[in-house]
Image 1 (cartoon, rainbow, N blue to C red):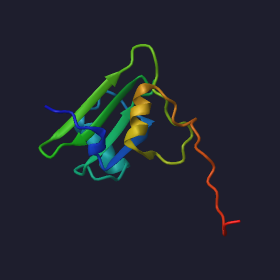
Image 2 (cartoon, rainbow, N blue to C red; image 1 turned 90 degrees about the vertical axis):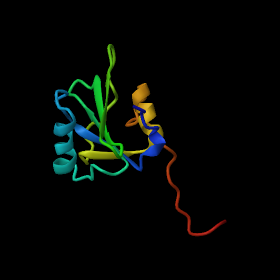
Image 3 (cartoon, rainbow, N blue to C red; image 1 turned 30 degrees about the vertical axis):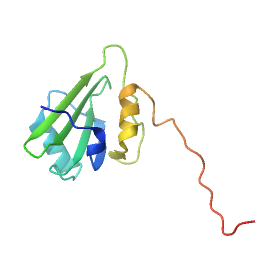
Image 4 (cartoon, rainbow, N blue to C red; image 1 turned 45 degrees about the horizontal axis):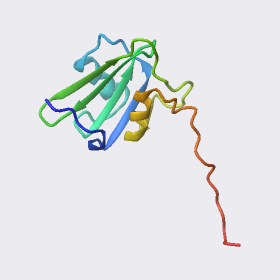
Length: 120
């Protein structure tokens, strides 16, 4: 089976709450439908983590069935949002790559947006 490129997905969503890593496709699908209120059958990737943030599961539909990807860190933790207002966080593919590499996206701040009414 082939793993999809991250650019394949129209949406990537992180479920902020910790999830029991014993959950497999059926258990995670229930979370997607009932708690996230999302469509399981689109080109969407759903990301889940355990309480210790050293394990991730990613779930997606690949047109013929569900695929489940699992990663366990041996000596580190994935940076995870703290006190985020929403239970579900949308992200871009490059942000997920950064998260998987250990970069703390929640501490990174871009340039301040400027709003002008005319050119000086």
